[in-house]
Image 1 (cartoon, rainbow, N blue to C red):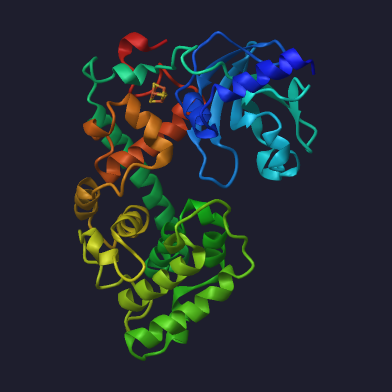
Image 2 (image 1 turned 90 degrees about the vertical axis):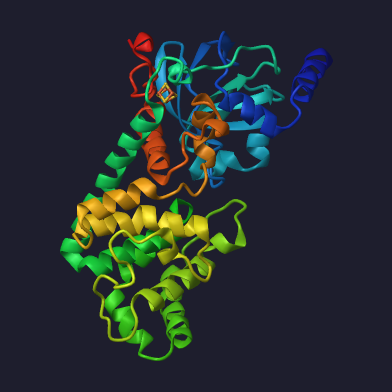
Length: 383
Ligand code: SF4
């Protein structure tokens, strides 16, 4: 590399204050014209959603590489060499990266190699201010008079029915209480600990756990349940990334044990818990290790879907609880969508139902490059 080009690359990297600033610029969906390090033109159809810290920086992006529509993950580094410094070239979690966005290409490489044999196209993103941002049609939904909240709510309802169908299938196989327990384990462990949740759901049955818990006081039963649950997640790799201690799998298992001890007292059997009367609020799921946000997640992903799907709750009670459940907060991956829909002040995701609708919108439309064809594209933007 000549000293002149080395100086240019140092200046390019320095133009970005940090890798986070570079990632923010990518998340905003840079407009064109863009050109890859190998010379091909690039158009951003959808920048993807921020990852959960366990793999690539963005998931579900869609880009147009010289006329080829490509969907996959995007990794961001201040410098090209960061890919190798972080060991991504040998990491299977990065095999789905379709674009490597760098602040400066400090290597004599026009593509980034991965051990899978793939060569990932490289984009050196021009410095801040050099490009117009990506503005999808949904940014004009409100001014076009689209009922944003109503459409998010309708999408959220569709997601509830999908979850309820899964609960019904589980209940047909195991019974309503077992279905609720399995879904609660999944909700508490969360998508970041999918492997641990799968281990719990696959190996354990509530009836057997309750037998092990015995008929002592609540504290003794909670300890017995924790001891019975722990082996199921032993050896399951913990999700990478920085996480709050309260969200660690071991802590979540303790919280699940406390909840199970309370929901299924001695002699109650593994049926639907009496503590979860139709239409109960999120407070019914709160307790040791389960704060407001986690309790809302349990309601949205386990109690209400299971109540509806198993028939333990009348449909009217389930739908009323769904409509009134507050959101636990906007997920990081939905922040770009929130910004396009008016920002946090407009509160498009103020309820759990609308938040769930946002997730469905993202997976079924945004991540499939459906700008102009999604329910939040104004008619004038459709093609
Ligand atoms: S698919 Fe719709 S909601 Fe998603 S970014 Fe495009 S216009 Fe917005």
